[in-house]
Image 1 (cartoon, protein in one colour):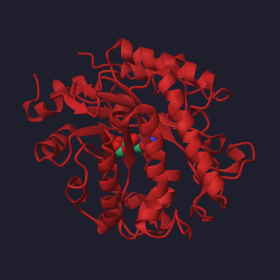
Image 2 (tube, rainbow, N blue to C red):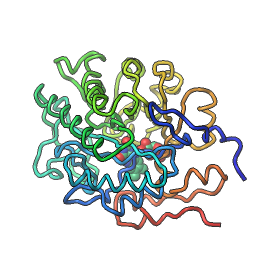
Image 3 (cartoon, rainbow, N blue to C red):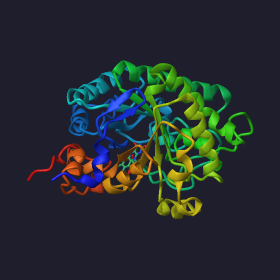
Image 4 (cartoon, rainbow, N blue to C red):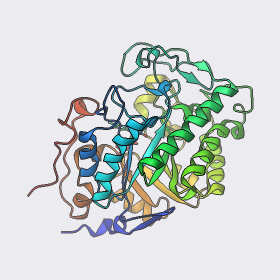
Length: 370
Ligand SMILES: Cc1cc2nc3c(=O)[nH]c(=O)nc-3n(C[C@H](O)[C@H](O)[C@H](O)COP(=O)(O)O)c2cc1C
């Protein structure tokens, strides 16, 4: 029996230059199963993504553009030919099933540790450490090196090279990781960017680095194949901005001028991280993120965080978002699209295998069987 309340999720959508078959998108999920030496996706990773190819579009796990961004052992890069070859296998496997796949292109900035990246000190907009332990090492974060203007340009060029290699690999699109307290987000937010030059201070200056990277990604992929993920009120990695609505209204308007394909908008209810970092709660800052930001961007907005098929369909019907992305549901339901369509039960994910193991908790979640 199909679920009529959520029919709208199955209307095709023009996402920039890409026509997607349904509005259910697989959100980026770091799973740490890539080769730890070459930092390239392997056959297991290709199998995992191909199992999820019925999504309207897959967004890959965070993929780094610099050795200074290796914060999760087993996460992939897009820096050399071996990694391109690994990604080609993934893309072919998804395309063989008529799926679409976008690379999430990423730099972790201060959210890593020199012990994870051969002694390299993390870089950030300002020399301010994350207040709390590193997730992998469980030791305090280091004070990062404040990037100078040459280093900012170097990282912009690394993003450009990553985009170039992603194009060579055959990705349908790019999503810039501008969320969750990684480098782009660190430049955007007022508590991690205290620079006195043209990359800090007012909102326009704090958005400059993000927009310069976006412009380089557009120069390689074209505006209709570039998107961004943002978390205006997220607290993960000790993030806070005094006025997220003003900041993201400006950013969305600038992205709108550039006519990029999509913005994946995280509407966090991140009370646990707010508490852990001693920051004000996300929901105390704003309750109506979609309503407040929708009017500033005319392209596709993908709603994310804590949604289900019914709540997403309602937001789409109300014109607040155009599509939905699911994270945790995609860990354990490779056929999520079919389960939503035919109102089938969902399998619960096991958090113990989110970031470790081989095929267990990764490719052994099977399609629904009667
Ligand atoms: C295991 C795991 C790994 C994740 N890895 C990433 C990542 O690499 N990049 C990213 O932008 N978000 C990442 N996220 C966040 C998800 O993409 C998504 O934004 C979040 O889970 C909220 O969506 P949901 O409520 O549908 O799960 C991760 C989440 C989980 C649970």
